[in-house]
Length: 457
Image (cartoon, rainbow, N blue to C red; front, side, top):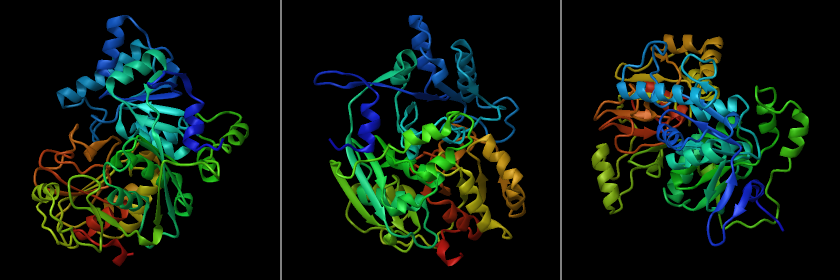
């Protein structure tokens, strides 16, 4: 029987199927951080249970960490408590922690791939919705809640209802200034924030296959923003070459590669739903509202339809129906988050700003996704390019993606952000977020306003 890539990986990990109920699924890798683990570990301790397979759990501190002066004590009391609690729990349960000061520290969905922990055919979970990032490698990866974190720590398994299957094909050649971030914002704007609910999405088509691994991770990262359980892309030579030589890949890499080559959807496999998009129709994108589906091509204007949700969102954002966003002055630019904080993003951004000066009205936060990326950026002289442009390379963390640390956008201010969510208050109480690609963010940083990046490249 013909099967999809998702089914091949899922079926290989089913331990038990419950009649008229969920399935028990084995988990290969479990990533944890400081925010969603304290209650899970407390539950284990209360019952006198140890983590079943600590070697399959990978810990880091990312959400609540400062991105300046990381070697100093954390100032915010709650953030410090959560990070300290993670340190203690990892020590008590023999889990290796890539904490502040460790050369592997960084955002959980950045360090997994760059260390080669994320591999094709694995099942991966984390108490974080953007775990779908790891699906770019042909893995089944999804976010879980705190009670499920405890479940995986205790049993290395999880109870799950098998999602339905969706395939999204993007074919053709991308236009000038169009990136992976634009692809996924375009898709979400077409499908809506609930269009993927109940599905696991496979991304396919010539435009997807042409993307680098960094770009594929951006696509899969935002699968959750259309309501999907996760996203997945079949591994290929681009995947294998990205993984080659990384710290935790199998020692017999060629043998592993031969197995990974089998991870693809059969030609005659059937999906429950399928979408087809033309890459030529995608432009640089920008969001105008308070969810990622409220996005438009930079050449378009805000919709004028009668909708209470639209009215509420525009009231919060200070926009009007029928308005073009081009030329709108902004206050902040944020390059970072698990969506766009990798070397490819940094190189793109720095290539654009090299030899230019940031606009006087804009504060720019440049936050790498990991210590390794920070060090690589310095080795390539990107920190000098940024400094000369009036910007600063900070230290790794989730930063202004969410208001859990010191990097918050002030109320009423507009931030062009490369992160994944533009919810009300996501970047700080009253903050107004406009999601965009690193290229669009770079254009905004230099001009001080929302700009069609195609006019400047």
